[in-house]
Structure formats: structure tokens, C-alpha cells
Image (cartoon, rainbow, N blue to C red; front, side):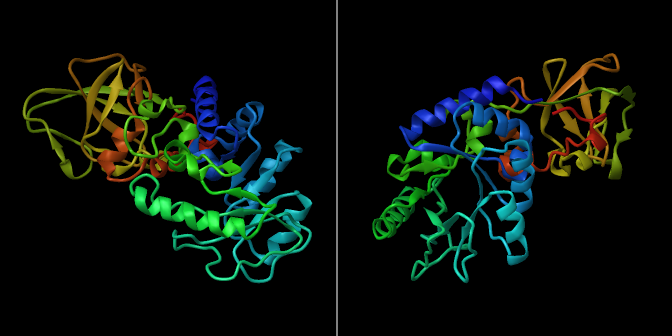
Length: 331
């Protein structure tokens, strides 16, 4: 379930941090699992200057829904995709080689990310409208981030007249010098902390809630187990609830031991996460249909990400909220 009010509040927080620079909403990977069309519509209504995606295919899908929006493809594209990009009036990031013609282009320079981007001579053409780079460690390394900002500023000074955009979520929230003409917030739009902590510390509100319900309740006798490989064996009579969500839905196997909310109370997840279900310990039997919250209502995605030793981006991008799984999981 998507909280549009929280999304609007996050957009307002990020606009304030940008202090006049444009906000370009990053909605790639189905808006980090939140639903690209929904998020894009809200972002545009709240004044976003552009929508940013990873692929031409994502851009074409957005164009069909938002005929007048600027749509910028941030990742590499290939020659066979350029016709579709022209027809959909997309803007493409480029990092060298032969530049496509008749398409608005954003030259990407590598200021320290060490991924894709021009490193030596910056190649431009009459189609180039923007200059961009990407911060490698704005969430962890202030010294290197300032170095990247300085490098980008030097390159931008040599190419006046282009729209300059560098800052990601962490850059927008922590580095005023990274604002330039536009910022590209991704994870912060969704009320997830780019720093791995409590998003409220940066005035962000989680947008996504993930809910299901208890499907079956049973009592394990002492010595009985639940799930594959008997990873949880009851030491005493133990009530458990079976929740019909599993790793096929994005509820990762490594989340055994995390907590969920059952009727609003935190309860531990036990045993092996199955493809389509997991078990949770109950203090007493509950009725089938009792609500279970996996994310939301004060239970942060950051907690599950810490359990997995990963980042919230990976967790939310892995949620399958498609119609095929809709009867099993509500996001």
C-alpha cells in the first residue's frame, strides 16, 4: 500500500533541501518497488521537473502515461533503442562513443564512481542539454564526496549553458554544494533513509506498507518443528501462525529471526522462509485473517535490511506486487 500523503511530504522535504534547484524524481525499477506510475503521477503533481529511469523501456512506459513530462534515461542505451527513444521523446545519458542524433542528451562524466562515464575529454554535440555525474559514497565519506563535487564543478565550468545535475538522495540531504541545477532523489522519495538509519532523522516518512494476514494457526508440541530443515524446534508447547508470503514475493529467506506485527504486536519470525509462506510465534491463538504487517505501522524496512546485511533498495525492489501474486501480498 502506498501512502501518497507521505510521498508528498517527502517531496516537499527534498524540495526544501534543494533550495531552488529542480527535483528530478528517480522512478526506475518500478519506483524501487513502489509502483512507477503511481509515484510519477504524484511527483509531477508536486512539481517534479523530470522523471528519471534506468532503461529506454521504462521511459517508453512512462511516456504513454505522461505525454508532456520530461523523461531522462540514466543508464546506457544502445543504437537499436534510439529510434524508440526518439519516438517517445526521451532524453538519454551518454558516456562516450558516437553520440546519437536528434535526441536530447546528458553527458555523464566519471568523477569518482568508477562506473560508466567519460573520464578524459568530454565529448559534446548540439544535442547535449545536460551534464551529469553520480556520487559514490555521499552516505559514508564526506571527504571523497566533496572531492567529487569539486571535480564536477570544474568540468561544468568548462561547459557553460548545460543543465548540471549530480546529487542523489544522500547528496541532496547533506551537501548543499552538490545541488547545482537539479537533484535526482531516489530512495529518499520513498521515505527510506539513504544512510541506513531512521528516516525520521531527515524528516522523511515511509511511503510503503506491506501487509498480509495469518492463514492458519497451530500449536507445536515440544520437540516439533516448523518449516524446511527443522530450523525451529519448539522447546515447549508453542503457538505459531502461518503467513502466506514468502521469497517468491520478495520476503527473503534471510529474514528468519526478524519481527513482524501481528494485530499490532511485534512477533518473531521463525524457521525457514518458504517460497510462499513463513511462520511467526504467537503468545496465544488468533483467528485466521488476523492482520500481519511486514513493513509499516512503525516497523521500518531498515530493520529488515539490517537483518539481511543489505540496503533497503534491494529489499523493496525485490517485492513482487504484480497481479500474479496480489492475492498473497498487499503493498
